[in-house]
Image 1 (cartoon, helix red, strand yellow):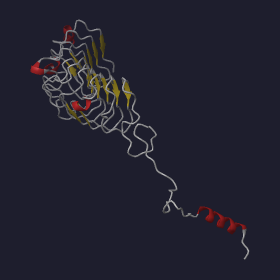
Image 2 (image 1 turned 135 degrees about the vertical axis):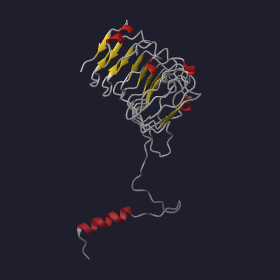
Image 3 (image 1 turned 60 degrees about the vertical axis):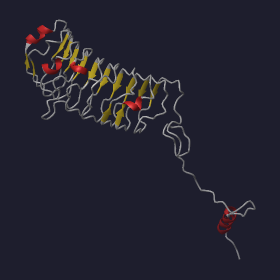
Image 4 (image 1 turned 45 degrees about the vertical axis):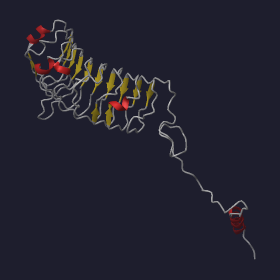
Length: 292
């Protein structure tokens, strides 16, 4: 029988790949290829059971960025020496004080562009935390707070959250707060009043005496009410930019804010009534913007 070159080649391939018996035991089949799973920290370890802590930096690291990792919660194995943590652009849905208890030295926490819809304050938060950025999350309300949970917090950014209203004592957890960013929230949208009287009071109804900068730009408030601004005696800068429903500045709204130095109302097209006598109460005013 004559074999063509093609048939002969196929026969040789079959013979070379056929399994051969071994004295060591039964025939073992080797996989054609193997699937591996890379750990969440980009460590390159091909094991589906790799710890989420694999590949984290050494214990002495003080600044860490975990942005864009698909995290649903903060890992419990972060270096205890951390002073600054950036967990922006992840999938976190909630933040509670106990989650931060293993970071006793943390001072700056940035969680912009997550899905945080719930805050749970209580014992265990880092005492030295002075900056918390929760901008562009899903917070519709702030939890009630009866005491100073974060006594050293100086900067709180809540911009871009769907907050519709602030209740009395909304910031009582933060008696040392100096800068509060509420821009581009839903305050005042629909039938909501937006900011309740005494919203900026601490424990026992005391005013937030340290707050210096308040940004309400891009919200839906119609007026600056004396019922809440009276609790900001040290206010130096008030931003009311791009507010589509702000229609007036009048009354005694600046009576208790004599330190006001900057008032910015740019691009608020509905603002048609400004009583000039209100500026008699602002002897330190240096910057006043009413463009457009």
